[in-house]
Length: 362
Image 1 (cartoon, rainbow, N blue to C red):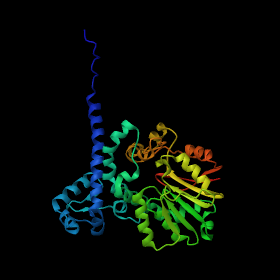
Image 2: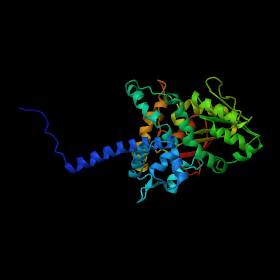
Image 3: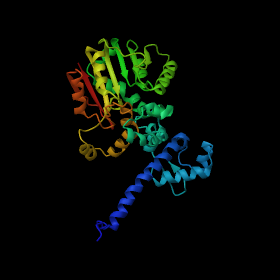
């Protein structure tokens, strides 16, 4: 007598819907690759400049083969990312032109697509991480990974850091104008440091990062800027101050990526003056998985990126804490800051689609 359980009865409609749901994820991944190509090949910039164009005209403008441009354009139009009129001319809506082809606009979105090949290549690396528990740091994504991060965060920061974010931190603008010692931890390619250094010439700015690719880019940008009140270092080579001498410390979207965020918060406390301030900027997250999936429509993207990038970085040492992309909720950040010796923690009224902003004081 067979002891095998009866095969479940399949609902044909439910099966069709689930199959559609699964392959819609593949469609998104493939179309994301096409967005990467559109950015890298200059197709979006050419479309913005040209207005409605045929694929032959677009190919001529970009010095590309028309047949390939045509198939790319058909993908983009089918995905409703670009428009096509009855005469077969393709164009960008004003909104699409901002997201795809306007780097100076805060809504510009090509940074994450820039590093898409590196992010997806991490699929090869993290298979072993599932066995060992140890991830990979940001430099495993190579130099283009660092450029992608730069392109992701610069547009919004360039438009909002000086006029919106810094004024929201009580008293910090006056302090920077008078002359302050500033440290930016996880400075990446140095965009925020250089932006502030130019705006506040009486203050000194020091960026720290462990990514060699990001530091190389920061050094290049510093040389191009001609500024003399900024510097960049790897804290493992040139340690951060530990003498309570820093007036203002910033961490932009990096604490959740760190292997030892608890120790970093303690290091920040050792560095900051008794009357100093720490601007903590990190991913908006809620306390539980259930809250995140209920209230964040991008939760699946963020948990996936965490596996490929953020959590992988946070577990890139065997004893890493592994916060991950959605691991630093307001309550978690507050309790960690208090444990590190900070006594005041205030959420700032700064609107951002992804990040939350906190003012933390000793």
